[in-house]
Image 1: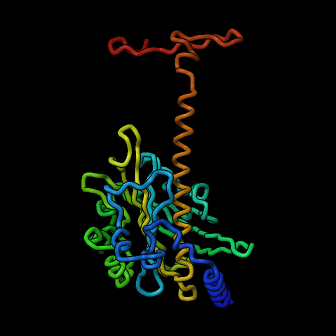
Image 2: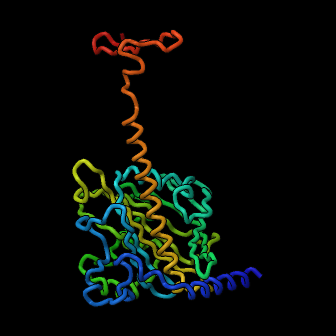
Image 3: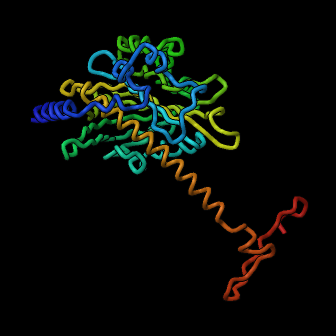
Length: 332
């Protein structure tokens, strides 16, 4: 009965998704040039396979997204956004595992199962993408048991046992391929566990990067046969004025649902959900920083409440003086 229910859900999702106009064509121009209106060879060349630190995205604009075919019932999806913040600000949000559902709108379930070594964690997450057609709300929903691993010095410098040559091996000379060539290469590149998809952003060696990997746990409940991705966080020195912090957040994921759910009808829904999550993370971080700046600007000077030598409130209560420290005499 469970198998019949899963098959029915897969067919239902396939039918509803096929009846929804494919919004993928309305995504920013880094989507699929083979399906962009009026797509041409020049469009394909402009649609780069990776972002570099020489490419600056427009702050506040929609994230860029790229969908690539993979062998079998699988896809590779890449998305990225620039955020007016420090890398630490975004890292703090992404590693607050128990609160991710408060930031990411498409997470309808987010359960911390157990901690892992080096700051990692095992999660159960259910994501949902909703759209409206003919006055009715339809949705695509999928769950997965995930192991999250932190790589604060970058994936290839993490020192974890799982981050060996297999992960760090160059799977695609992306800087030297056109977009169309990268698609042709990726369409034949098999999905291999522990060989993560290429990050959607690369930087010169002097620019530090931080990576967070997510991977489905074999033998645990989930709607994917294969799911593994890389969040990359890096500072952007040349994309903002000297006094403004700017960083780039990207996510690269390869996913293969179970056989009863063909990926083609729902790939657009998955891509849409990822871009919505990017927007939510960016807006959350920037709003939090803006509130902190306002509170700091509106706060009274530290000496105004106590006075230099202490003070009193309206009821005559004398506030204690703040001691000072002298290097020779100590606290006085």
